[in-house]
Image (tube, rainbow, N blue to C red; front, side):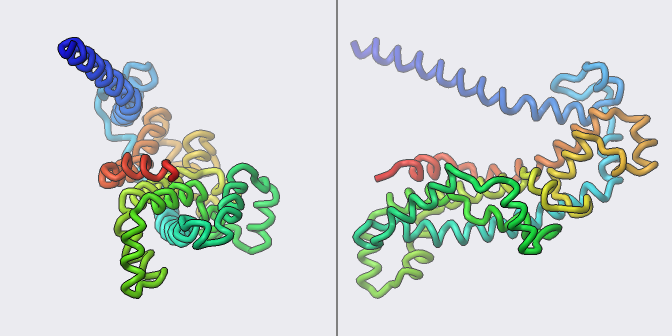
Length: 294
């Protein structure tokens, strides 16, 4: 009986590892293929001869991207957005999640405030009202137009407040008996104990700001102020010829449009790929504990 159970458990582990490895490959292989295309020659990419390894290795696509100040200027806008947006999002998320994590007897109107925030997930004011608000506040063509409309990510608030609720109440009671106030409890107790949840929320926030493209097209009037993904949408996807110089057009005669797109796509994703490994060890714990409600 024990042998049968052990054998079944071993078969399940083999199947589980096979499934997870296959799923991982489905996620990784497109990135590897994009990288291989970016380092391949024009004829290889155009003929579909590139698989997971570059064919007729060439740097020309990256030379083309390196010669484009617009690409790096838009990346600078995105870096500024990610830094300012993440700092603002995290501050508001923490100070909102802390009171909402309290019991009803400690915060009388807690349930009503929670439903108020949940309502904003289910219903949205619409694109035109959002644009008019940003315009009337004179935020168009500024960095704040990309940061302030999403200053309070409600999903992250719910994730963090549930994590706060999972922390032992005895720690808070002991600190309160020693004279700690709410600000001290938040920044000296809750925040240090919530590193997994905070790292997960930071990862969500950075990726969200880095990958956002539609608001840049809506709120930025000049291409010089486009964030990276908005720039790529107009140049890489639509291939807006008005944003290309005569030098760019001459270079495109010797390189493939597909290789240049692949090079810019990989360069745009590379910074996030660098950040993720440092936060990955907190990711699963933060998601699991933050998604369970007491």
